[in-house]
Length: 383
Image (cartoon, helix red, strand yellow):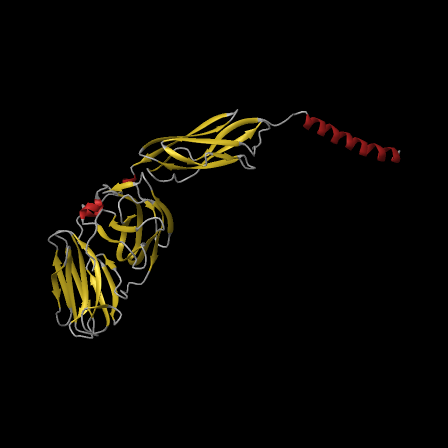
């Protein structure tokens, strides 16, 4: 009996395996069954830019499992889609990216031959009212394109840059091998902060600013009208010290330690000076105090238009204090120097914060107009 049972058991197992194999083969070949959207539908983005997320589909076979190796054909109206064909992976999925065109509705289709088509819907909004997310310590890749925000003939991408704390000193750079970079900077409410063309070593831009805490808008654009191409935008904390006569912009409401040294701008002979740049609108007040025990300090303020015009100065003994009320919107140069030739050493510069009205404190969350650059001459005298 024992030997009979030993013979019978493997035969039973073998038959079971054979029956299972026969059952599997009876299903026949797997065929296409369905094409469905995974994600990416219903997005909104600025005209001329890529949609934030890829469009993704999945193909399922007749065995209700994902089906790889299936060709999907993509097409778009009101936008550009890439690639035009793609192949599903082992999970049955594949994706495409969409670059938006003019403002309006966008339809993108994904088609599998012999199976059908699914449609994605998107909206391209006015790029001049769209702020891309950006932050201190971040680097982003951007592209100036044909359908970007157009301001006075210049294509521009707008970025929202929050500045935390009481103040920060930032080096904001725009690097490109395709175009001559230019940076404009605004407050979120739309007031102009300043600009930079070149970083002194290339056609890339570097905007150094000592900025009071708040929210700013970085406008990445170009020196010449109509330039397009890729770029990299970055914002990095840096020292507030003005070194080697570099270009440093200020907002009101900041305090910084500086040093007059032989490497600073020359003011003739052995007198040295630090130069700073800022923007004032008509009726705005500038209140600057300088304190030092190292030299006999003086402050000078110049209005920069076709030439530099001295509009205010102060060399008070016991504490230098310059005040000025702007009679028109302009870029100004603030100079910290010494009354005594050869004077050097540390000093502290304080710009009083502006006085905001209730209306000014509740400005728009988006850039309201593509004509903001017209507030001040685009190419002003620097030095």
